[in-house]
Image (cartoon, rainbow, N blue to C red; front, top):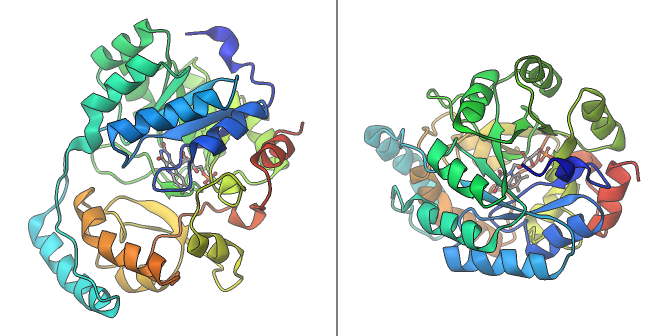
Length: 340
Ligand SMILES: Cc1cc2nc3c(=O)[nH]c(=O)nc-3n(C[C@H](O)[C@H](O)[C@H](O)COP(=O)(O)O)c2cc1C
């Protein structure tokens, strides 16, 4: 591990944000501001992932991170998926689309994306939804890449360190988007971010990056005072000029009618935090666990809702600090959060 790496001029990491909000421009802008920007690899083809890393790299002289979804065994129960398809039917009808097929998928192109990072060697690679095997981490580590694993509990921290992570992204319950949970029961931890940081730091001597609900300079200073080397922020960057956040999502984040966030499985079959809307109110109770099957089932509805500018049929990922998110250049947001 490159020890000096943690001395970022601004101790702020721009979270990887798959599904649109994360762009190479955003990653480069965060790094140019003295933080560390991330290219999100999730959902992209390996070719597009390589292009995005190359584009981010070309737009900054600072470090670049890349992020991957770790393949996970399916926990889907097909009877439950069938029931959920029935519940989704009337929503799909409302949007003039069909419920998607509950495919298990191709592991999000895991093997080829590993080759992409081995080839392009971003300074840092972070993983979410699991801990890669020690072999994979040894291989990428031997290429000089700093390796981080996202954890949501002390148990997951132990697994990640045993696998060979150089550092951890400690994701607390206020985080926007998907929780990185990979413990067998898939239930995200409820311990506060501060408690989690303290507990993990008491047992493991690795750099910790704190994430989840950090929306103000005071929030960032709070986790640094608790020993984190940096704060990773996602929601705070959703309104940034360089973010690819769609217009439905951008307006909902600033619309006082959306006054609450909830942790829901309804969109993807994995727990994720977003603004409460008609979709979560109607379907959260009946939605089963089962990623990526449920994600594929809801995809046509989500796409149709975005096309119609309707915030009630799509996921509006947001952490608990969403009220502090401001539009403007990412550099201003990052410098302000980092107290620079
Ligand atoms: C829109 C959105 C997309 C996200 N996508 C990813 C991702 O692709 N990979 C990942 O590791 N984390 C992802 N996250 C989680 C972030 O890494 C981070 O944990 C979270 O944003 C921190 O909480 P905050 O949103 O309150 O700042 C995403 C978060 C958001 C809001």
